[in-house]
Image (cartoon, rainbow, N blue to C red; front, side):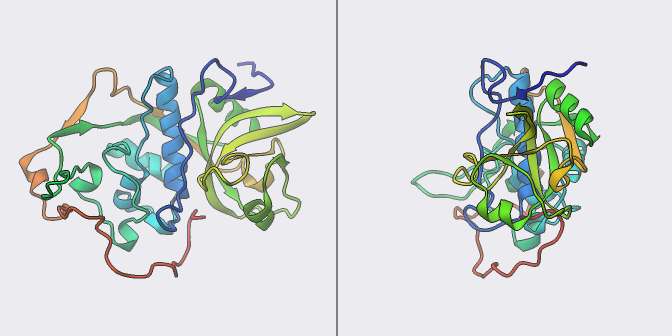
Length: 287
């Protein structure tokens, strides 16, 4: 398929088809970039299929942090592995499973209340698993790499998740413009979502959404030179195709066994044990 010179899912059509940007470091540091990038790209693709119908469906990174055991929670993981877990299971949205900045690696294990939980209001009482809740699935996922194939995937079906290197000047000093690393750093340590591509003053770029908050970069986004595999961005990417579970409002119906699971978190609090988790050992894609 012939590609346009520019395609950005935020501006190329009459509506903005990107879901909102997040910060993985709030309420505390967690190496959750892999889960944020994977769920943000998937949420975008759902928004595209729903023609930007309000409200946005924001797929929960917390479920992956707690339940995707093949990844290391707040110590890192991979976007492709995240999609593999969703493909084999199911996932919920942020209204069911809000971000806790904790994972199975540091005290927030997978349970039925991890998938979806509600807690009573001012009168107190234990938390519980709702009788039913919305679920989301994918029918296909896979890898993609190289400028042309990445552009085709983004243009035809939506944003993708990619691993990148993070040179010091990108992490500390980037405030805008088309970034080009000159150090040759190709050590992939971070996952982001690539949400478009374009050309500015003759220079080709990828439009990238990060997960470090809107105060960083270009309101949370950055652009990087395209076509030269700068910061290894064209090396290791993944996509997922969502199944339509929202048109017919398909739900998970909770069983008695799920409600009574002893692994559930019933306490009406933030569930955070005392402890200092500042000295984490990092691996996988974590920044």
